[in-house]
Length: 452
Ligand code: MN
Image 1: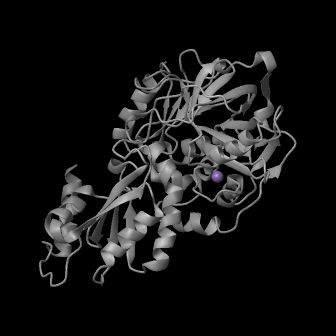
Image 2: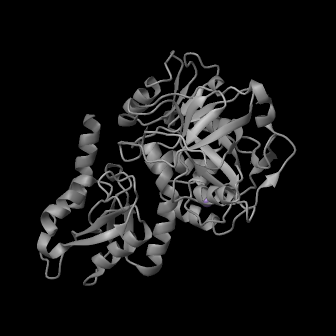
C-alpha cells in the first residue's frame, strides 16, 4: 500500500534533488515557516526535519511545492499530469475496509488524549496560534451516509480541543448544517500524513455526494485501504500517519483565526466551530505532515491542480484551439493567463476568457495571449499586454460577479468585478517578433551554457 513513508523513500532514492533532510535542531514555531519560505526561493525542495526541538516526531513540509513532485506522486510527468489525472478520475475506485494497519500501532483515548504531544506549531506572526494545516477531515452526510473529505485549518486550543472554520460554501459545512438541524453533533476523523495522491484527491473540487476516497483510489489505481475508527462511526486511511477522532457539537461557536491564507494575508473569516477530540491513533514511526500555509507554492498548487485538470478538460471541449492556461503564483488563485493557437476568430479571446471565468469562480483577471507567448514567463505576458493591447478596445470589465470571499478587495456581498485583457494580435497585424536564424540560436545557447 502506498503511504507517505514510501513516497519519501522513493524521492530520497530516485529524486534526491527533490528533498532536503535537515538534521540540525530547529524550532517548530516560525522557524519551519522561515526555512520553507527561503527554500522556496531556491530549489523549493520537500523538507524533512528530523530534529525539531521538543518533538519526538519528524516533520515533513512542502511535499507539494512543485508541479514535478505532484506529478511524481501520481506516477506521471508534468506534461502528462492533466491527461493522466483526467483519464483516471473518469472511473472511480471504492475504498476497501481492512482489519488493522500501521495507524493503529499507538493510541491515546479518553483522559490520555493530549494534542500537545503532536508538534503542532505556529507559522506566521499574524496567526491566532498553533495550527494543523495538513489535516483532512472525514465526515459522513447524516442523510445520505456518503463520506466527504476536506481540508480545514485546526487551531490548537487545548489538549483535546481545536477550533476550526468549516468554510461556509464547502461540503463539510453543508453536512454539519444538516446535523445541526437534527440537533446532533457531527462526528469527524482527521488524518494527518498520507500518500500524496490521497491528499491531492482530498483537494479535488468534485461534486457534493462524491466520496473523495474514491477519487484517491482512481488516481492511485488501487483501492484506498481504510480502518474503522475507535470512537466514531467513520473510517480513515490504514496507512496514514496520525488519525484524530472527535465531534463538532451543534450550536457552539468560539472565535477562531486569523490564519495566514493563500492570498498572502491573514484571514479572520471563519465559521468559528469547535472540535472535541476523543481519541488519537498513530504509527509508532509517525511523521507529522505540514502544508506551508499562506501564499506558498505548495498551498497554491495543492488547492489548484485538480481544479486545473477539470477546467482545462471543459475548456477544450468548447475551444479546440486552446493552447494552455497558467494560474501564476503571483495571482494567488485570482489570475490566469490563457494562450490560443492560430487562427483566432474575432471575439474568440473574450469568449475563451468568459468560459474560464465561468468555470473558475476564484478568478478575477484573465489575460489572453497568442501561442508565441510563453504563459509561464510573466515578462512575456506583460510584454504582450504592453505591445498588443489597447485599453479602450481590449479590456472588458464585468461587474457584480460571485467570487471567493478571501479576496481582501472583494465586496462585502461576496462579489467582485472580473477583468478580461485581450493581448492577442488583432486583425491586420503585420509586426513580426524579432528573431535570428535557428542554427545561430542553437550555437549561441551552446556557447552561453559552456561559459557557466
Ligand atoms: Mn466533497
